[in-house]
Length: 514
Ligand SMILES: [Ca+2]
Image (cartoon, rainbow, N blue to C red; front, side, top):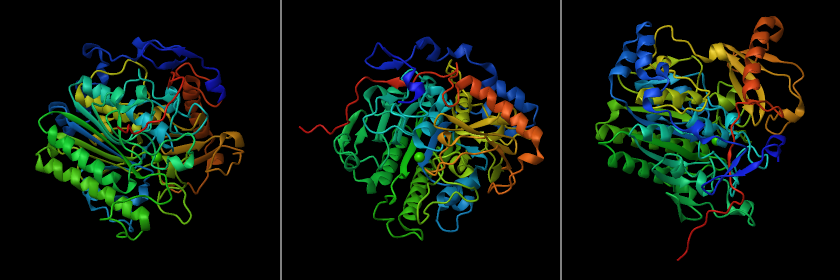
């Protein structure tokens, strides 16, 4: 158990789950609609955007709130897509999405690994704020039969949108807690189909403790072990059924894919196996592209394309394999750490008439911004608890002169509990770090001095320039200190941290045999 976890006491909750530390549930409730932060609502943005001369953003304000489809791949890298430079994989459907929407080329996840990254996607909070930057036993992600999960009182994007009248579904891989109080159905999703954690967390790894990999519908295990070859196809079919059932209703479809996943041999269905030029990994990427095409075709067929915001991204970069499989090109590094390759992921957004078609947005945006931005679009009340993300509708709409709010604030790169780097504007600064606080894919080495890169131009982080820019180093250090003070760093705690959810005893998710 980490120092942090050791210093947090367990207190009994009212509904069978436990809270790590003291918690005031009123802090986590949604604000009543009339008391939402006005500047973050679409209407408030309209005023700001009119000053920028942004007709598309005006259209956003005048349009009814869009349906939301959020597609998140698992461990897929920037260089894995044709639209982002791959010459190896055929991804015509994602490429079409990019032509019809905007490519985000400085888009960051809040962690280089699954659980914390996905927690940030759904809450707009740095994982460390939620105490989900590590598992209860000090691991980088939650494993099966985990006592920890996303706190039930945290407000997710699904809860925000459900409060605004949206139908909600999570189809794919959850990974924010496998105990009943932490399942998607307890976090605002009316429907869940998929696996509760990663595709590599199978019984053979720990036969005494872990169950067969379960496929779930709602809160029930319907198959175990699930046949992983068919996960992408079946999740896609489920997603389309959800779209068809809710074509006349506003909806939020969260499609966090299970693939390419965490095994050295990504899974794909027979129709794709052996068809790509990049082995099992390429087959899998091309099936994910097929899945995207099916979703887009369903939107067209149902007449929903114009009123649906589609967001396509990954939860972290491709991971290191030997020989290499995925690509994070043109960025340096592999998934699981704080390199550009790990945390700067491909992102495409399409909302016809609002988000410019065929455009590129290189301002710094993050998955932390999704909840604030989408809540604004939906006119939904905000979580009252403090968030880290920003409403970036001006950047989505390509408003002239719109700048990233992170340029003034600094976007922080944590690996587990350690603040390792910060970016503001073009500059990314890696901090001096003892070996105990680093992890460059298990090759632990101390970082003896801060390292500064212009990651707007030097995408491969080849030219270290700290000595030439002492004022930049000082400014970025000060920005990181603010976040460090708020949510902590290493053993140092911050007042802005909130407890993770916890159960005293975790039990495996098992198939009930009658
Ligand atoms: Ca991942």
